[in-house]
Length: 399
Image (cartoon, rainbow, N blue to C red; front, side, top):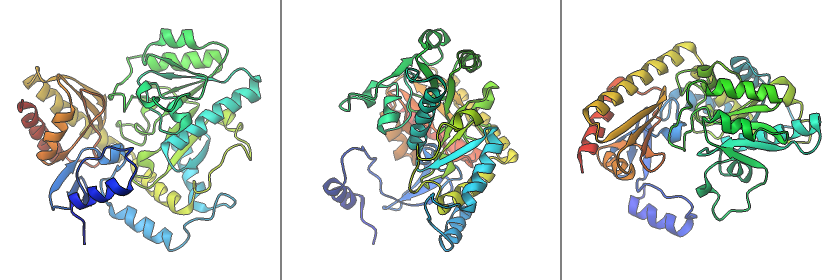
């Protein structure tokens, strides 16, 4: 018997930590872009587990892969080889142009590995004193102590101070500020290609080209956090393709497991040697079950025809938003983003608009006080987008 939302909320209040503010819905079923709550109401999900459920809810191939692998081998630890682990590493390194892979359980954990790799590489190559990492203001890299220390938003730091030392923050998109900060103590620059939690903020034209050139000149590593942008989300296989550059280290998550907990660190050949045996590991990361699921997902996500479809759908979605902006210029200030990672900047607080949309049967979340973030399943249809646009217009008309 399924608990009602009131029963579930009372039980949760008694037994769950209060560290998360949850929407008062008990979601019990999902299929494609749709989810249903315990009261039987249907919603179109334009959050998708925060850019995670790339193929929507409960795709058959995921269920079949999990079932088949679970009957064969679930976990053996990284003391042994397992075939899905090695095949996924081969597939992702070939696809990205990077050389080595490490698998873990979340995007934050992948960023922890990237931070350690960058510092160890600099220590091995240049000795002590070259360990500072530059990140961007308004960034978000995860909730663990290393990842949160690299996050350029003080609201995530409050009460957990002191943060880990030797992280510098500069405005995103400001190459002059980055150049000034990149002194001899710096070992790496850590950036999101598009700032997600910061409000779906893309970089100015030419920024990443200049960042890549600066890192090359200074002999420091460029780490790209593609946990939200990677794996077709922006209409390219990886978002760095939009800027015609390549990172030294890249982190992945979210879509790589599409709801199964998986993270990945991909590295160029030279820095990868810094994490020698005994320097970094994980008990569950790289387990056969997770790797089998991610391998099937990665093959489908990085299929050129699928990526082209995402790009086309993203262009259509953005054009519909721009049409609505032209119709309601007093309500919508800006439409930004790439592919199916889009932000709509409102002329008022976004929170109440998300509540109205929920009442209309659409799940959307805010990324910043006035920004609606749209990261639906990559399989979302044009007709579902049209329904969302109609609902958003109704929500904005409600004063």
